[in-house]
Amino acid sequence: MAKNLFIAATGKDVGKSTISFALIDALKKHGKRVGFMKPVGQRWLPTQWGEVEEDVILMKEHFGFGEAPLDMNPVVIKRGYTEEYLNKVIKPDLSSSIIRGYQKVAKDKDYVVIEGTGHAGVGSVLNKSNADVARLLNAKVVLLVKGGIGSAIDRLELNRVFFEQQGVRVLGVIANKVIPTKYDKVKRALEQYCAAKKLKLYGVIPYSSILSNPTLGQVIEELKPTVLHDTNEHDAVIDSFTVGASSLDEFIEFVKQKEGNMLLIFPTSRTDITFAIPNLKKCIDMSNKRTLTILFSGRNKPSDAAVTILKDENVTVLWKKGDTFSLISSLSSISIKTRPKDNFKIDEIKRMVMKNIQYKQILSRLTTVPIQHGRMHSIKERVRNLLHFN
Picture 1 (cartoon, rainbow, N blue to C red):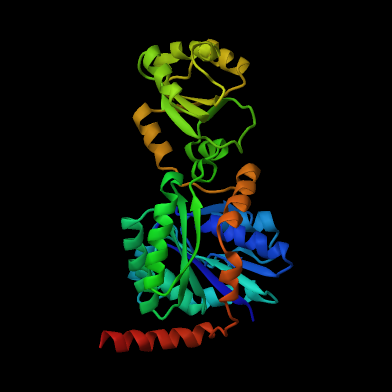
Picture 2 (cartoon, rainbow, N blue to C red):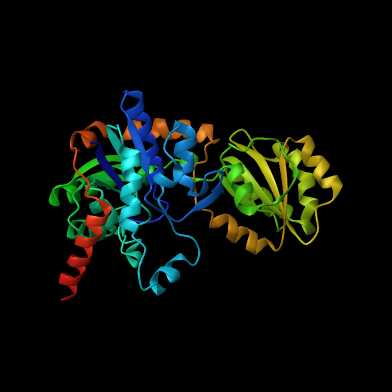
């Protein structure tokens, strides 16, 4: 029997897949047989294996897991799934699906890393919240929270109570994306909270723009722009984006404040500013920044002259039909995910996470536990719900 660890979080995009990835990598390097599953997934992609959660695709392709992705991700929540589920008189047996997938993933494994979806209560509408799934798989939980003090501790407590009311053991906490200048304050506050709740603080991970920002490849995948010139730097992380819709002087002032790889957004009506790109280094210090990508917005494509100038500067040139405001909104709402081909980001994940968490302490708290058969669990769940209702 395997030892099960459930990676949960207090919300969306806190870094569950980042932690899961780093733990799997460390376990495999130490010769352990590891399985991974995301029992309930919401962000799926069409693949050769069917519609599969994107985190499962990352883990399978990078680590070469032999299990079928549909076993690693047995429940996929697509558009309309929830309404369809609620309208059914006889509900599908999701417990059995999850346990069947788990049994295949866990076969001959030392550990299974199980990744949740959103906060503890996500999935409750299907009677399969993260807490329900963790209890179903007899897994112990590590809670991940975005670095902070007040709101972070409030969210931790809300999620801790939810898990423990479902009979799930929360071992401890990892804080992620902590602003370096607040690192010591956040760590002290979380240590106090954990001590009061009999939890362990297993790590505090500083904010990293590499882990927190999208790559050029992800921007292209999400926005689906027309690629007018491709420098094939899709794994490069975009550190900032700036809109060049004002005067040239104001644009230069904006660029002065940026660092790292910049994505610059220009309406096609302002291609005149692009003619200044080759001369930016004459106006400001560009040693700590680089124009990685120019993204044009507007009804028509930018002029050939503007594109030619940017090609000579080794800049990826994109065009997305539509207004600038909508484009900025789409950029801001991108959910940051690591893709199998993001080698630079993957290396940073391994380095940052292992440097800042006490993963051996987490593993020492895990024990092998039996998993009930799905059908028997479903019967017990129905009885439990009836008793609770009465």
